[in-house]
Length: 76
Picture 1 (spheres, rainbow, N blue to C red):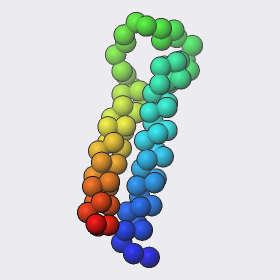
Picture 2 (picture 1 turned 120 degrees about the horizontal axis):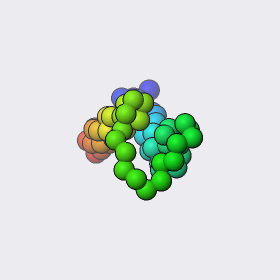
Picture 3 (picture 1 turned 90 degrees about the vertical axis):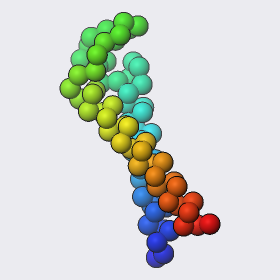
Picture 4 (picture 1 turned 45 degrees about the vertical axis):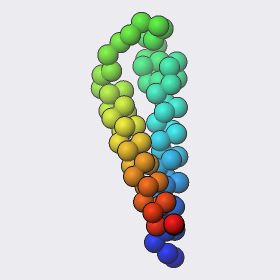
C-alpha cells in the first residue's frame, strides 16, 4: 500500500463521520428532540452532548480539509 492509499482511507472515514455528525445535528433530528422537548423555532443554547457534538463536527471538518489538501499535494 502506498502513502496515498492511507490518506484516501482516512479521508473516507472522516467524511462518513462528518456526514453522520451533521445529520444528527439537523433540526428535529438532533439529540434535543430525543428528550421530548419541543425544539421548535425558539433558539436555545447548546448544552451537554449537543455542545460536544458541535465541537466534534468542527474538528471533523478541519480534519477533512487538511486531509483533502494533503491528498491533493501527494497525488499531484
